[in-house]
Length: 120
Image 1 (cartoon, rainbow, N blue to C red):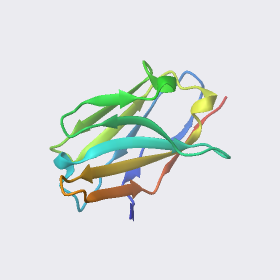
Image 2: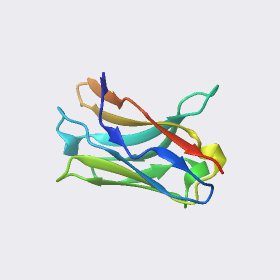
Image 3: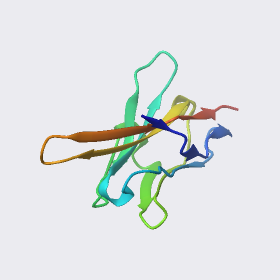
Image 4: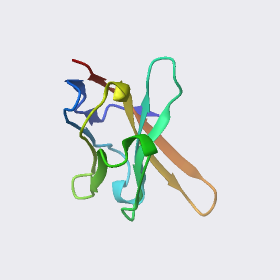
């Protein structure tokens, strides 16, 4: 299921910064693990960063030290602060919300994607 929830993409020069936001509706946001994925042309979608409902974070090696994922449960919003951007960060970035119950049922939602282009 895809929701129109993302904002903040655009064109930026190498070394610049962008902040992506994702505000999904129709879920109990605080219960979900939130993640950012990206897909570059001709490549598979890959995990960029994830933050659990308990605020534990994990990052792809390629973005460690440059990107920061955070969440504001009061605003039902997850952010991806991207600094020191490189041309290889160019991709469509997707927001993901997931939750797995002890029963084995899994809920997962995707944003529509937002383009990030890093170029001079």
